[in-house]
Image 1: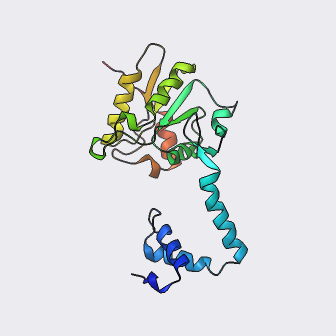
Image 2: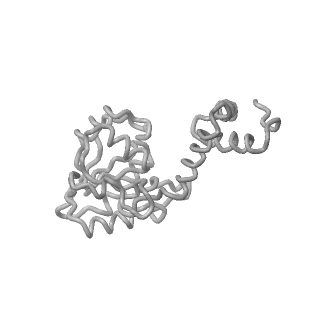
Image 3: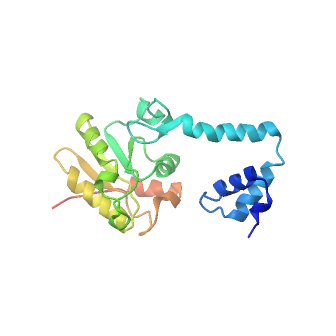
Length: 206
């Protein structure tokens, strides 16, 4: 384990923050920070400004929940080229961008902000389900595509949404079996997601 206390306080803080990133331990964070110390001062300053802008200039889209500039809907929600009668529901923003990279979907999105997880205290009121209900009431949506991870919590969330929103004139579909059971969509590749979306199935509630 690196002894980060041997470094000045600013370096210690940078190592500590970078250690919070997925897959980055304290040793990797230490190497990254020490590598940055070899950069030109203006390069380090530029990185600092870019990170600061994440807090001051980036927010969630008020319509779908995607990341966008503060005060503006995202480019997907405002694009006239999108198919506007279908909404694809995802758990988190990274999954939205993985689907976009697949090139298999041209409709709108809705980011839930997670999935139902009673064990972790995550219920319907903790997700952006009310916002989705408002969109379905206010927009001419014909299909609701549930692109949720095929694990227990994802399936439970999909079934909950299907029961909640089943109504005449709205087709509710689920991504197909291109994604392995129990997988997290965040780590699925674009080709697999393209297969899953193109082969989506209709959910029918008894």
